[in-house]
Image (cartoon, rainbow, N blue to C red; front, side, top):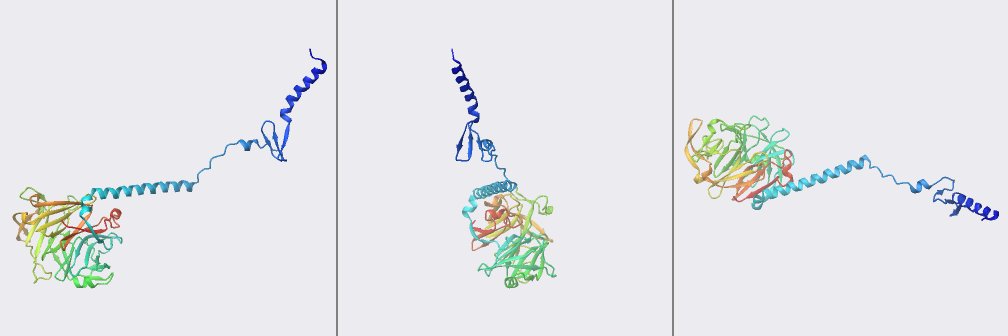
Length: 383
């Protein structure tokens, strides 16, 4: 039993216990007051417990940072695609690159010029024909033996600008021959060689051949020029659709004109032979060993060089050329010695010193993709 005095002390203790935790405080660092329950009162009396225990809000990314991240991602993806594409081209055409040697860069390849053919002239200069992707006049690019390059304008015999496709260019006997609608333009080789940058050279004549030639090449004093065929956009007359003795179906022809110094252009008016040739021929050249090489290509498909043994070409009948019966030979499977697959868009070809030099349009500003893997380089091979 508690006495009144003990009861009073007990009650006082309980009261102190209930009041003490909410009011007792201690001085901290001289100014701040820490509440017994763990809160903090700032010097101005405001409760600072909210700031001490609140979570930090994450910083929101700005639109500029988001845009930068997207651009970096796209750039990384683009680089990965380019690397994969280049690797693919090198693997897919490993046989070609294994036997090809880089010679020099195609003149004008980064100017809007779309090269179609090349020719090694007697004085050591290289000539490149083609067209302007912007629709302007079609130039000839000249590469001197020392590597100096120049752009030459061409005029038709009437003085108008030449705007042809520039499918073929070749030279011989003091002349440069350039394909045009219906035939060939004949220019002075001396004037082409001496023309200053941007100067125009006027053609001295035009020779009709009866079709729109896609390529031309003079080899062993014979001028070869032929037509390009592809079903649909580049059809040819039915008279050119021929079947060879071994059953090969060809849809284009190539004329071979022999030397005749008495004519204005240096070759006979009537071809000495006609060749039935495959589809999509872009250029031709004769190479050592009595062989003929035809360059074929279209679009992004692989280019193919077909090597024929001329002595085994199927000969059958004649072909009518302006009322003249001309001996007919077939480029067919029976005479095919080999074929060489090459990167897309190979165009004209030319043989010099036993080497076959190859032109390509894929690295022009019109197509661009060839710039990624050296399509603007002139390569040579020994077929």
